[in-house]
Image 1: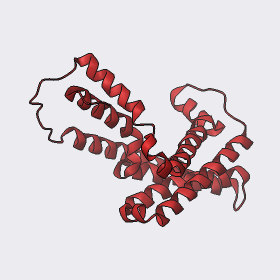
Image 2: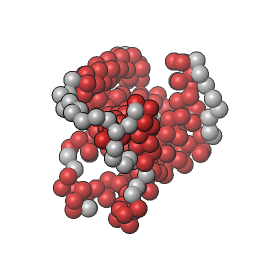
Image 3: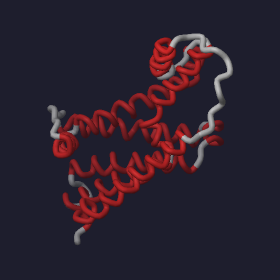
Length: 219
């Protein structure tokens, strides 16, 4: 069995199993959290609470003006990274082909050169964010191994994707295997680290907005 065959076969199956089981475990733990009962009457109707939840999804996605001078660089770099990562996944032709094989849905992709350029910019933004985390005294103090592992498991698929596009340091099959394995590493880590925020961030903001609306607080 070659490395590519392992990556496409047993490696992918194990990664999928761990990711699904981990996500179920994580979501179950969240649903079983003890919640304090609401002793006071709600300040809004059910529709008002739902509207409050939706509003907070958007308001908490934008930085507060008060903090902007201090966090501008972090927000810009984070936005570049997230937008770039989304473009790589949703607009790269090989990724679209994979989605089509799984779901039967496809759409036009971007040229390979543009994807490589976006990947390079995304990679640069990640490196800048890492240095900011390591050099900023407060962020360095608050950072844990989870932050660095989550960074690494996202960095490797982008790096190997760039190397694969140019077939630079090894043959195509070897680089493809390394790229797939790096994605599988990200899949395995996703439920257990901060990468899980990709699936929880909007749900948590909506839940907070519902609670704020119940109490009559501004979102």
